[in-house]
Image 1 (tube, one colour):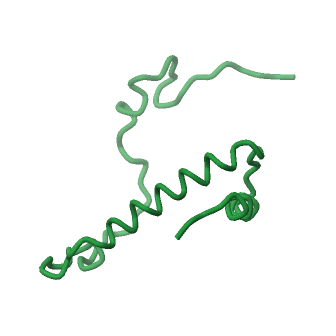
Image 2 (spheres, one colour; image 1 turned 180 degrees about the vertical axis):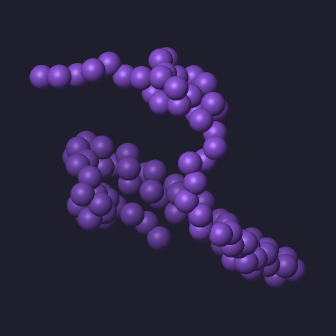
Length: 95
């Protein structure tokens, strides 16, 4: 598979990306390099390789949906430049 400048122009239009005309040949060369690499990967013999177990096979643990304040006010405000009690202190802005 080979990508020419017309295909790059169409891809850029579909992606709504502005590409300068002089950049099209360079992008075509990059696309062709990527496609050659993918074709090279497809030639690898994977007949004896077991499929990997992905994250979809495990079920996520559920927790109770409770509204809390987090209980971490000191940790949250540890780096605050200025604070008043358990709140961030900000300058008053009135116009």
